[in-house]
Image 1: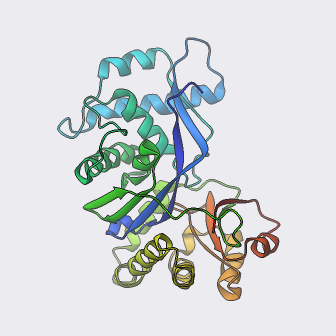
Image 2: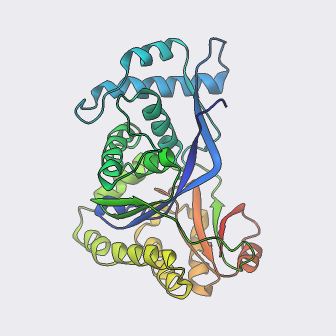
Length: 310
């Protein structure tokens, strides 16, 4: 990779909630990254596949309202001729921002009068970026909050307070020697974001599901964000358990079948709680535990990756 690099992200809280005005908290995940590359050499199969994906995406940018954002179409045409592709190790369909990083990279390369990620980022600038990114990323998912590309572009923790108020923040410092951890569990297969989001939007048309989202899911998500930022582990884990239950009961199609038993086991034994990482259906699953050593042993048959210690 030659850079500039755009890193992966983890939506710690807010999956399916932020599109209904819940709070959300998204963190950079610098374990994975991607960069736009041009080449006059013959592309290998993976590079060629990426080139076709990038080509389709950047050709679609001309359809975005120029009052929102405009792009350098001459540079796009030239880069397509030079076989531009996204050199990335971010796994697709894993809920860690593979499309978000690409959107951020494309905006950075082609947007005219772009908002620089190093300037003073007011709420209005962040909202404008979020709007731009939501329109760009809709190419991949049909509907997007714009939060993933925003996080990938800024490479900073982002707090969504509401649909009209977002800010970059500092999160509580890690305690590397602490007993607790947030971790990723690899499901072993990619999810299909668009189909999961479409299913969610269909479910939102039913009164009972809509009421659950508005009265329980959003409230619990907000509490998790607030208690995480306050480093209040007792209340955080109390609400994490509620969130894990709500997801298990109401989002079953988003939980891969082979993980439903361990999902429920964590709720019952209070050793760990699982939640969706992104849209679900595959990819990574997020886990929270107050005893990382015991949880790791309990889940030893699975591929786990700790991302935050407390």
